[in-house]
Structures are given as structure tokens and as C-alpha cells.
Length: 86
Image (tube, rainbow, N blue to C red):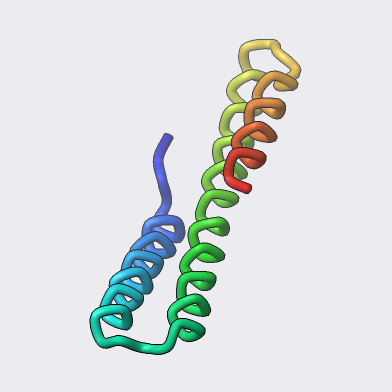
């Protein structure tokens, strides 16, 4: 599967946010500020997971339809991936 620039950019942003959190810890910033930023990182990663699963679902269903399948197994796999991310 190819990952588009939107997903790569989102993950790069998450990486930058995480480095920012590490800097905050090293600088002794307030706990509440650190937790807020960690929550933002988690949300960003959750969105990336959702995008990857959604794109993979479309790709898998299209491939299964070409092969004569209904794509139900691919849908179940995507649901399981989404459940793991929670």
C-alpha cells in the first residue's frame, strides 16, 4: 500500500509534537501542560490510524471486488484494526 503525503505530513507533525513534549519535560514545564500536549499527540496519531485504515479499506474492497469477492473479510479486518487503535 502506498501512503499519501497527507498521512506522512500528519505523522511528521505528530513527531514534532512529541519532540516538543520531550523538550517541555526537560524544561520542567507544568504537568497539566505536558498532559495537554500528549493528548494532542495521541489525537493526531489516532487520526493518522483512521486515515490509513480507511484508505486500506477502500483499496482492499476494490481489489476483492475485482477478484469476485464481496469484500466482507476486508471490512472485518479494518474494523479489527480500528478497534486495536482504541
